[in-house]
Image 1 (cartoon, rainbow, N blue to C red):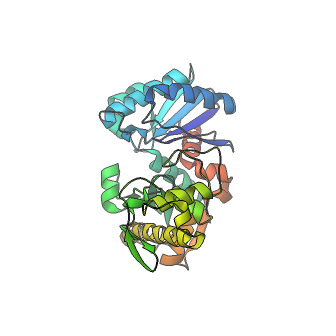
Image 2 (image 1 turned 45 degrees about the horizontal axis):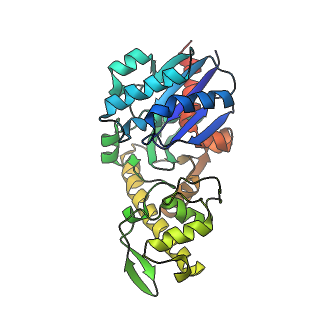
Length: 336
């Protein structure tokens, strides 16, 4: 049976077949939840032929849904509609799969399940030792402890994972700058920022050169392209200025300040996770579009720690779509 895995988030859809194909597409679920089935159908035309679909999700948290259980049910209805007559299975945080009817009856068991699927798959790749999986995406960061390849997380739901530091709600694209800093450097002093979503971390990492320009990507704070020139303008707005009011050097100093603040936030989370490990953590496993930030984090916190990348286990696309890849691999094993 040919499986295709879907990871359905609030801002992006990710698909992978567990054999090398991986695709990520922006999709503002919170704006157009009723159009999800159309996007699922489009992705199926781009993916290798499949007769079965495995689903994991975080999109149920989108504020277009009145409550998370209803979000789960509506997402699954949309996936069913978009996938035609293909077999459909849904991943649970218990580490198994259920059909849509059972998932809809017990929605809390499949809500926010993608981190667990990714960790379970990563544990197969690295079955020995005490490790931490660091996945930094566009919106959130997962810090998942693994012991001899087994998921050893203290939290199981979004709220319990937030409490114990295993989920840090910050990423490399969508996090508003004003949630990370209160002031930014300006003319030798500090200036209070505008508490408005004028710029996000996407602008920070465009300006610092960690992310490339993408003229066709307009999922930005002002809906203009994701380019360094446009990012300069957006970042200047954080101080109620225009792009010509700040030099390239000044705008990069502002971006570096935001990056430092985000790293300090992530350091708090990973420090809590590492302290709970029974054995000393011997290595870190990295994945996601923010892998560059994870490397900076480890360089600060534990430069001697061994680092493995899921990119080396396949390709960059697989690493950036790790939960979708994971559910495809796991479904092929469990759903025979």
